[in-house]
Length: 176
Image (cartoon, rainbow, N blue to C red; front, side, top):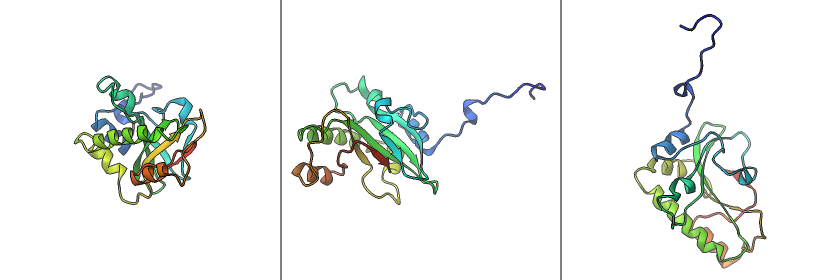
């Protein structure tokens, strides 16, 4: 029992962990609260729909940088909890869209991420990525501010992105 006038300090065990944070930890990643894992320059460009909250985030690229330095790695996983309590994962990759050649780079990163999601360690994250009630693709291309977008909505590159389940580049995202 705490002495009179002494406040009990919160322990890490008493902090509530989101489903996203648990799934990310099970994959060996280091989840952070809200969207703290997302670099500041990009964080302001990512929002959630009304009634939803960020339930955590991970910097996947940094986590695998030492082990896979030559790989085309995906950058961020972001947990979103909807107003009804359902949690899902959105995968966000900040990348320039200043040339149509960037599509191949993005598809390489997406293929890398999908291979990770197919591993046993990422099983829970994959379930949250493609869970029930999900509409639209969970894979987002966050167009970096530098340069214009050279990928038009009716181009062959746009069709290729759609065929692979990757959203068109956008300078501002509203998840999910």
